[in-house]
Image 1 (cartoon, rainbow, N blue to C red):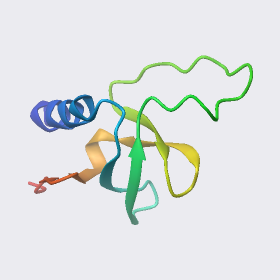
Image 2 (tube, rainbow, N blue to C red):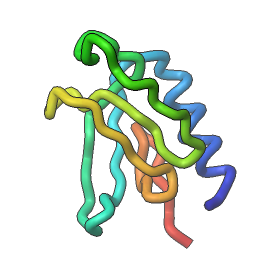
Image 3 (cartoon, rainbow, N blue to C red):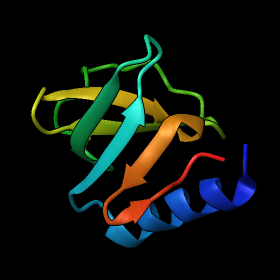
Length: 88
């Protein structure tokens, strides 16, 4: 993976600081997905959640439309907010 792309994605998420952002990516089954999400949501966690391991390739977020926690792989992101990535 291009480390610059990963760095840009992380910077956009960090700049949002828990506010809403959109991300477009390719799911594992090959279909595109557009998701409105945010980080830092703790309201809907289970009473005693298992601790999640941090990952360098996957970002965990709260999907606003599905009202559930989801994740996306940095490698498959095609757009995050207004930043579009062109596949090489």
